[in-house]
Amino acid sequence: MRKSKYLFASLVLLCFAGVSNAQDFGLSFSYFIPKNGEFSTPISPFSIRGVGVDINRYLALETGASLYRMSGLNLKDLPFESKKSLIGPNFTILIPAELVIQLKGSRVEFDIKGGGFFFFGFAHKINYGNLDRAIRDHEQWDVANADVSFKNNPGFGYHAGAELTVFVTSQFGISLETNYLVGAAKFPLTGSYTGGTSATFETKPIDYKDAKIDMTGLEFSIGLIFSSGNSAPKRPKQKRRR
Image (cartoon, one colour):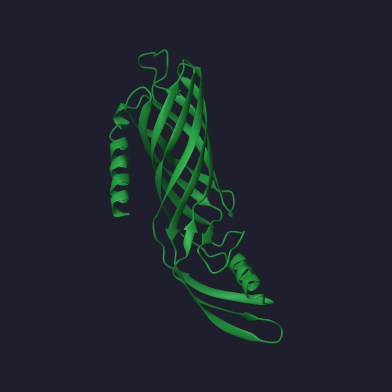
């Protein structure tokens, strides 16, 4: 795992080393639909993606960073399952590092992407309404009330996706991108919950040391690309956007 983190960090630094070669800039809006969570929105303008270096005409390394306002995320590896978000809202920064296969035409470019990503959430809140309902259903009680604390940790994952860019002119293009993310971050819970049926009530401890934030879901983006146009190229250079 440690070697993988060093490799990820090295790839991100390599990609940022190529930012000075960037010819284009742009605007984009990225959204995230988490598994068993709630639709999340970006925090503009704190989002830069698609920066990096071209290895050759067909291959590139890219990275960036996006700040999301997560409406709600789920937790996994608990003694029970929930179909609704258990934490949120919060803020999450996401940094990808990806290998891109570039298929370029005169006015159209189709990119196939894949790689890893780092994420870190902060300003977490427990969704006690959904957590209490999940515990109640798990225990088959009439009522349940939890009181928990957590330990936050950074997370890692992998992703794959594709991007279609159509250049309306040599200096202006529109991009559509979709990525599927699979990631997790350790989020151990401790505390207790109290509840029961109308006949009996009891208190049980919570020690969910294996709990993790589930960063699985679909990310999609709509962007506008603006070429610097310094040399009036017939085909726009590698995109640098968001």
